[in-house]
Amino acid sequence: MAAGTSANRRQAYNRYASGSRQMYVYGSAVPKPAYEPQRRVERPEQPKKVSRQVKQNRRQAMGMSKAYVIFLAVAAVLMLMVCVNYVQLRSELISRSKNITALQEELVALNEENTTKYNAIMDSVNLEQVREKAMNELGMVYANESQVVEYDNPTGDYIKQYEQIPEEGVLASSIDVQE
Image 1: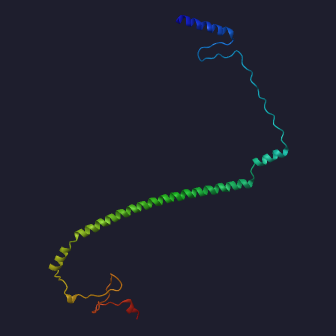
Image 2 (image 1 turned 90 degrees about the vertical axis):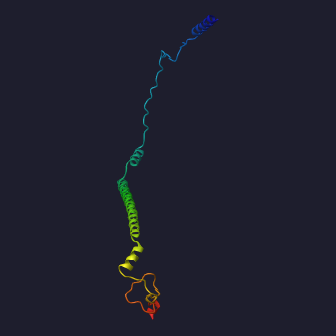
Image 3 (image 1 turned 135 degrees about the vertical axis):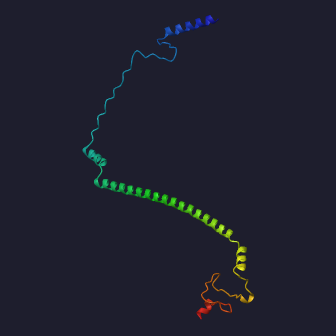
């Protein structure tokens, strides 16, 4: 049967090939036809005749007046100045920001150093040693009740003593001074 099938195929091919003028091609290569179609040659278009007024209007539209050129030049210079000024301001802003950051870091370092030194000083002072030294070496004693004078301070917590505290213990207040 296999031999009969291939013979049938060959006969079908022969009938097909003899009955038509086209050639059967196996594969994807197609032969170039024996003739080439004629190419159309395009003729250049002849320019339409344009009036003198239209030509003059076109030239005016394409050209620029001196005033317009000056205006554009001034606008370009102003824009350049604005851009340069903007770049300078941004540069100054960035440098100031960096300076502020450096100063803040320095402030933090100084505050830390200050706190460390303050704590070291406070740790180095022993109030019990100060009391012992004052009482034993310098001969100091606690005050008696007769030596203590209490007074009212009308201005606040801090006072500078320019004269002796009065015996009654009351300093001059602002009301007493005005009278």
